[in-house]
Image (tube, rainbow, N blue to C red; front, side, top):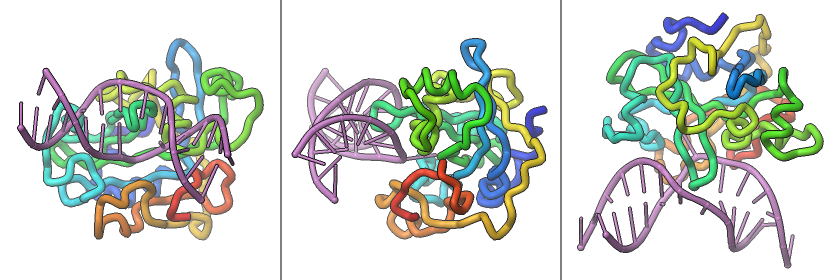
Length: 201
DNA sequence: CAAACGATTTTCT
DNA sequence: GAAAATCGTTTGG
């Protein structure tokens, strides 16, 4: 069962990012099922956040989906190569989002290896937002899609991350965001090998 | 219409 | 550790 829209449409995007650790992100794309446990997230707090594409509540064709209701996907192309997957949160006209940066592979590992053109299961299979999206088959064409499935769905399978194993740090790759680059909006599971290597580690 | 720029990953030295 | 790969989005002329 996918997490309900009420989970996403809450006010505190940083809290949501934290709660997403331990949830299972599952996709069913090209009739292939793959999934993994979310181990790393980042919150992007909308109009007041210099690191967000929606800073200053600037609406463009690309960011429009973030101004819609929470519970949908925001997928965009980064560096011309990587498809980065975000979850839109909060209500209409509040452009909050959570970037999913890494998962620990669960189901469909053979499919993920094939999509990533890898032979063996190493952390780099799904560590990092671009790598994770490629493994799950998420592409920019899925932007705006509902997270109620079947293509993309986030489930609570009862996996609990202990409070002391949750680390808060500064976000990766947002040095241009000036003072907002230092905010502790990145969350990851301590000592998990699938957490990406970022500057803030 | 032209140009710069990334919420990154991989490869090579 | 440094640098290339690569292209849609955004901004400026």
